[in-house]
Amino acid sequence: MTATTTRPAGASGTGKPKLRTSAMIASFADPGQKTTPAPFGHALVAAARENEKIVGLTADLGKYTDMHIFAQEFPERFVQVGMAEQLLFGAAAGMAETGLIPFASTYSVFAARRAYDFICLDIAEPELNVNIVGGLPGLTTGYGPSHQATEDMAIFRGMPNLTIVDPCDSVDIAAAVPQLADHPGPTYLRLLRGQVPTVLDEYDYTFELGKAKVLRDGTDVVFVSSGLMTMRALLAAEALAADNVSVAVVHSPTIKPFDAETVLRELDTDRLAVTLENHSVTGGLFEATAAAVVRAGLGRQITPIALPDAFLDAGALPTLHDRYGLSTDRVRDRVLELLG
Image (cartoon, rainbow, N blue to C red; front, side, top):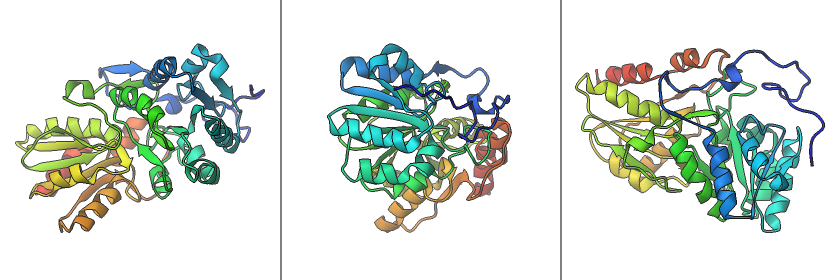
């Protein structure tokens, strides 16, 4: 099935003209940083070669979620539903009922805000193997509140049976895709697309669904991070070393179910504890971590580095990341401030 209309980059289905800014396809990679092109698309193709039940769907956003790579390789296993997110997930649910393994891509804002009820009752309640792939999570576009999914994890964390993955880089994505396909229930992947940084290959790290991993040790500060903020946590830890501050980094790519055992083991110390996430301070990694601390009776303070509980500005990503405290320099400055 092929749509007869297309959604311009940045448009929201309202008939607005195509925008000419590069904010939609901007990269959060630092200049000169090693990147990998379209890791999700290539990982999905690789998984589909091994498993003929994998199919791909999108809501007129194949090119902007790297799903077009799968479509080119397996056109007979690809469905374009057009600008209809509720139909996208309803169709994916029907496919899963027949034994197929759908990966359905759109922007995170459209999945979380427009199609929540369809995902909840058609996919999550019957625990179907549908993999929701959400592009532009958090502050990865400069297009403003219509496209910045700053509250997507808060929305989805309350949905029973749904696994939520917030990958750091191309390494996480490449390893996550086949594991998501093998997972029996529904999943939500916060997609990093285009030229995605490759960071975790420099560490003794392997992605495991549902597990957090300690990437580096430190004696003064412990970072608990997810998504692209693990990259920033590692960079900030290196920068803080020049200030004689030793920082440990714990990467938690699975937000739900949350690996409280690993995280609490690292937090049960007298080190400064900080969470870092590309998401609102409300309802994401910080609150998952804080809840685990309270349940365990650790009785210690956790400081969040996160986006504010607000609608954010539009603009260039480097400017916005600095404005809202996600840049490496801002993370370093905040830690030095906390240490006094």
